[in-house]
Each structure stands twice: as structure tokens, then as C-alpha cells.
Image (cartoon, rainbow, N blue to C red; front, side, top):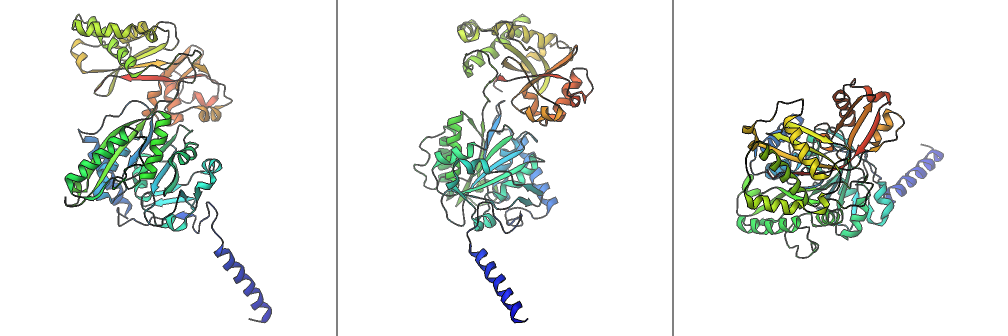
Length: 502
């Protein structure tokens, strides 16, 4: 190497060292892919073994008679554990079982920092996260950065080493075949300001918030159960004083604090899906770690209303469901206890139930459809619509024979109260797909004399817009691909949904 070459090399080396010494900007990474670090430790490193284990855990959760009842409103957030699968996998399976298959295209995943020590939050520098089940692209987290940029940095050591996010990812992959991931590791922070930033990512209805958190650590079994139940009660009550008294309650206090802040502001309702600890699964009972699965549900506001009336309360909705049941009981000539009749009549006298509104009544037996009839427009008073549609669903749905008296006790009744359908202005099929909101919009299509509707609840069976529209076209008697021509009249509406207790 001559002198000139050496000088050039020295200049290059100096510049490279200077670049190494500069702080990493947000999103910067030394690797485009974040490869798994804890595979073979917390969970199997072999794809087939991992897939088999998760399937087995989810199948066991499906059969669990003590699994929490899932409301028929939209899933907004989950809290799930992050320990080794032998210990917390059963509880994690209960959590992800609440996710309707492929209904979400993006997951915002918040977990606690275990290994580095920093304030606020670290966002990944990688463009893709990989597990033995495959790679998941990292989504755009710029909206939250634009709101509170001072809260976020890329802490490379955390990005490489943290397990709280990595171990939840395979369970998410088991329920969602295609989605973007926004992984955020959190240290001590102000829950309110952090929630303000995170909320910007949740405006898309196909985004799910997932919180990775364990409960108490290394207490004797009975002490752990007592403390964990207290902690879960605080979560289920959306405790506004969450950050107080956090002595050995959660490994994830700050992500959970952000979750509770969001839940209070957006009126999400928490449901306990599962609780157990390592003494119940793969460890002894002398010193255990607790695991909880909690789902948060919430309706989207009925944005298409043309009046100023308030949404119905759960008590008013329960009265409508009871009216549908009473209507069918009376049809078969049976009677209801006088005290129950008087109680229901008092509830039905509520002025909020006298308004005109579209309604649907759905009947199911063993979770299978047994009849569903309704009216889209607000042409009849709410009570009349429920009575009429309860009878129509039972005896005049052309897809089913009339309901028999012997079936009545097995029938599960659901009542949907509709906003007025609003015409959707779209340009073509691609535009239509982007405008539909899975899990939120009921959809009416019309072409000539052919028309049909799907309630928002149908998104649970058909979570992707393309098959949703194709099945709706077939229901209307049109070719399955008719929607692709962009010539359908499309209207959308939202519902408030009420059902009988199971």
C-alpha cells in the first residue's frame, strides 16, 4: 500500500469510526431483520414443533369450560403473558383465541423493558421481525412519533435482547396470517402522554393493541393467587390509580398503565379470559409467577345517525332482548311469571325505546344460525321492530324451517339496533375495499332488483373485505365477483348489539 492509498484508507477508517460513534436515529438498525433471540429457550426453535405446540395450546383453550365469555363487540386490546411457553403458554392461548382469525392487519405490541434500563419507549430499528413461523413486516410508527417525538428512541440493545415482545409474536402469527407489527418496549413513563401518542395508531379499525405483561413473581402459591386476583380486579375496574401500590404486581406496569388510560378514555370493557400461575403449569408451588389474559372490547360509535339521540344502555338493550324472548314464548302459548312481565313492561316504557329504528333479530342454536330477519330503515318504532322481527326470524326465514317449540329453550337471541344506512361514494372496486371498515360497518349492496345485507357481526366469519363482498353478492343472487365491476350501490350502517347471557 503506497502513501496515497494509506492516506485514503485512513480517511475512510476515520469516517467510519465517526459514524459508529454517532447516536442512532429513531428507526436506525444494524440489521434489516430482527431475528429471534429466545427461540430454543422460551419456545421451540423448530417451525414444526412450535406450530404443533401452539395449536395444541389453542385447542386446549377452546375446550376449557371456564374460559371467559367474549362479548359480541369489537376486540380492541389484549393483555397476555410473556414467559416460557411451558409456563404461560396456556394463558397466552386463551388470549389469542379471542382474536377473530385474520380480522386485524396491524398489531401494536407494547412490552416492558427487562434488560437495559431507560425511560419512555424504544421502537425497533428493524424493518422486519422473524420467528420460526416466518417474518412479520414492521409497520409505520411515524404517527405516534409526530405527536410526542420526545418519548421515543431506538435503543439498540433493547431491540436485540428484549424477550417480552418476541415471545408473544408466534401466538399472534397463529391467528393472523398477514399483519404488520409495531413493537414498542417501554420503561418508566407518564401513562397519559404515552397513551396520547399510542392512540394515533389505533384509529384504523383493523389495528389491535396487545400488551405483554406477567403478574406477580416468586411468591408462594396461595400468596400469589391472592395478590394476582387483586391486581386483575384493579385491571378489570380500569383503576385510575393504577401506578400506586405496584409492589410485585405486574411485570409490565407501564404498558398496562397505558392500556388502562386508553380503555377509560375510549370506554373499552375488560373481560378476564384466563388466570393461572407457574405452579398450575410447569413449576413447583413454593415460588410462582402469575399469568393473566384480559380482553378489552368496545363498540365503534354509530357515526351515521341523523338524529341526536344517545346510544342505548346495556339495560335498555337487555330489555329489547327480553322482549324478543317474551314474544316467542307467547307465540307458543306459554306464559311468563307476572312479576317478570311487570318488570319488563316497566323497562319497555322507557322513552328511549319508543323511537323509530332499524332492527334485526338473530336466533342461534349451538352457535349456529337458526334465523335472522330485520329491517334496515327506521320505519317502525323500536319495540314493534323487535317483536315483528323475532317472529319473522323464528318462522319466516326462508333458509330454515319454522322454529319448533321444543327448540325454544336452546335458542340464543341477539338484537341489533341499526343506524340509518348511508350511501357510500366510491370510485371503483379498489376504492371500495379501502373504505369498508371490517368489524364496524354493516353493508347493503343493490343492483337492479337484487339486494342483500350483512350485519357487522358477519365480519367475524369473513374478516377480509374481498370474501365478505363476494359472499354478500352471492346472497343477493349476483355473481360472486360482481363487486369488482364497481357498479353496485353500496350503503353502510353501524349497529348496537345486545344478546342473552349464555
